Structure formats: C-alpha cells, structure tokens
Length: 312
Image (cartoon, one colour):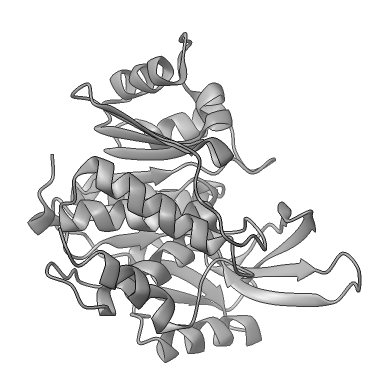
C-alpha cells in the first residue's frame, strides 16, 4: 500500500475537451471545459491551493490539445488558475476534443467526437514518473492506439500507483481493452452497471467487487451507486457502504463522478480513513450536481469544503 508521503504529486493522464450543452427549450449552445481527467486535475489543483494541515502538491496533467481556438482557451483557463500546463501537448493536425451533451431532465447523454488531439498524446514527450507516484487515468483516453501507447509507457516504466476511473462510453471501449487497463492497477472506480459488465459473476455487489479485486490484483474498488450511495471494498476484506447522498440542489449530473474521484484521490494523498474519504467524496459530488458543468472557477467553492475538512 502506498503511503501518503509517496503520493504527493499525482499525474493525471487523458482527455481535456469542451462539453457542448444544447438547451432543451431554446436550442442555445453553451461550451464548458470538461473531460474526466481534466476535471479531476482541476479539482485537485483547487484543493491544493486551499489551507489544511496536510497540504498536497498540485497535479500534473498529461494531455493534448489542438493548435486552435479551443486549445488556446484551455491553456488560458489553466494558466488563469495557475495550473501546470508543461505536459499539455499541442497538435498541429488534430482539433481539440469536443463532446455534444444532450440533457434530458438533467441526465446527460454524450456524442464524443473521434480523432481529437487527446487521442494522439505523444509517448516521446511523456516523462518517466517516480516509483509510487499516483497515476490517474480513465478508459476513454486509451481508445486510440497512439495515446494508449503513451499510457502504457507511463504505467510500465514508472511503477506508479494506478487509479483507473472506468467510463464506458459506446462505442469507444471493448471488454478486452478495459480489462487490460484494470489488470495490475491499484485502485478502481466504477458504477454498478460497469461492475456488472466487467466483474466475474457473484451473488452481490460486494462479492463481484471482491472477485474483481482478486482477479486483477487491486487494492481497493470504489463503486458509485447513484441515488443509492456508494460502496468501497478492499483487498484486506474491508467493506464500507454509504446511504443515499444529500442533494440540496440539482442542475445536472455532468462531472459528479469526476468530483467523487478527485476527493477519493485527495483522501489517498492526505491519508484519510476510508470511511471519511467516502463520506467527503459523496458530499463533494452532491455539490457538483448543483451547478452547470463539472468544475467551478470560484475558489470559495473549494475553500468551503477544505475548511470543513481541516480537522482529521
């Protein structure tokens, strides 16, 4: 098991893009920065700026954007927040990623455009990470062989502690591909439907999670259950379950899972107990659904949580 001291500078690998929301009534299009890895990096950076007894270093994001207006906007937004852009590559041939998001009663559906810049992350420009570094990645960024090769190099050469955030978006995944990403990881986060697809047979969610852990050498599996809460199962036999989240205001569910992942990682970095980590991750995800889009530019949004979390 990694100690908090070895996980001080997480590496976030994968897509950064714009989610394009079309209003159901007016047809007006709103562009919002997104991509699960970008969202996680954004949250972790914001929390790294907030006060606390065990502050962590901000993350480094490995991604790729087009040399176009959207790519310029992404780099400017990161610079505005003082985020590290040194590992965000620029592509002269492929455009910045975009996703068409349709909302029906607040629930999103996605049209993820192909052949985007983040599909072509150059392995030769990816640094070797120190052993024990926490490496977060999802499954979408490995849909193309070029970025998949860069990710494989990161995982194989650096011996990181790997957090895989499963996000099955048709048609951009296969069972074999995702199984390769999960094998040898340390932590995994997925929802109940994804667990049913990827885990060996079992009589319950807990049994299937244990089977997934055993068959892939995982340390911990985090399962989000939507309105029913969340579940964490560890290789040592611990099993924790949260009840339904408290949602005071609902706008849309975009990015709620990314918010959950970011605080799970924060808990690993800060050495929080597993139960406390789950509770804080759920509380933050519940706040994310109260706003449009997956991130906030307001420091007070993050500071309010950090102030609550100062006590161990």
